[in-house]
Amino acid sequence: QVQLVESGGGLVQAGGSLRLSCAASGSIFSINTMGWFRQAPGKEREFVARIGWSGSNTYYADSVKGRFTISRDNAKNTVHLQMNSLKPEDTAVYYCAARDTPGLRYDYWGQGTQVTVSS
Image (cartoon, rainbow, N blue to C red):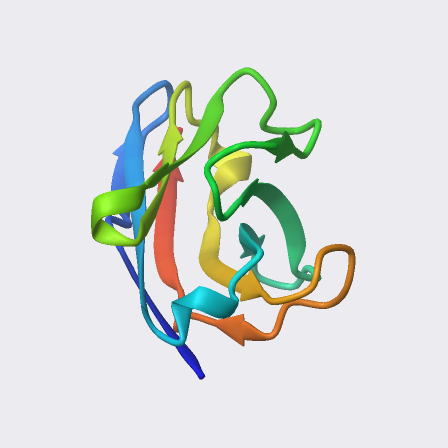
């Protein structure tokens, strides 16, 4: 089992920045990919970004490309999501996720952290 704990959410004005963190613990040797998803009120959960556990092979949703950066801190088994130029439409609960097998569903999920962007 893998445990994921997110932190770093909050309230920010449009144009501002936030950095989310996701600390992984437990059977982290099994992890292949880490990802970030988000869910806004009344909407389905959507993919935001992912990164290979080695720290390579990043991929972003078009809606955040050029504004968000996903990275991994190997020493701390932590994945970060740096969010710049935030927009009100980025408001959502952000979830960290991990999977053991590339290309398949995510096996492990964090509890989520709220990001609110005011206009």
